Image (cartoon, one colour):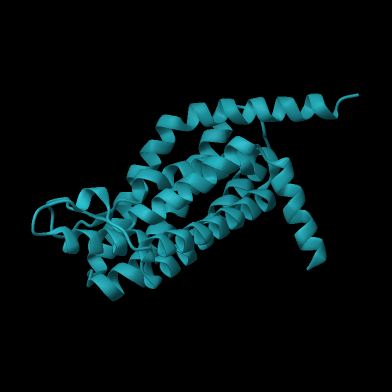
Length: 236
């Protein structure tokens, strides 16, 4: 246990502060927006607002894995999850503080709107639990799959290898994330059908993969810069 804690502190101190910050912000954001279902206009297709942030979390994990390895990326993911739970606690406490949200000033509906906003930010235990389980499971899958593909490719340099690692691991990781959350939360508490759960998982994974494709050149440049800086720091 002490060894694990030492490694945890070491990895957090070693990893790029920018990547760690992006990880934390994206995890907090996607879990907050998971409260909102997106009206797609199609009965068999269901999505939630978390997809607007989840691609950033996976891109950050891909860069972390590429530069520091899957163990470091996974420990940063755990740290982001713990900080998200801490933020959820603060949101919950804020919802219990007497006061009025600015958006609730609608004549005749103040109390209803204010209570709804409080419940939105406070979250519910099943959404927080479901999103936490889905995120950590998909993070481990993404990080170690990304690393494994890199080992099979036997190359660490080049955008082609970075893209292959990122695209495959992101798609499967995102599919797992979406599917686990849909089965644990959306089907159990919101009445989604199995078809909706699978289409949500698949469509979300495709949309998030497209975001990864769009921003992977930036992720590659960031990873190259980090690797160069690390080599220069080690060089005598």
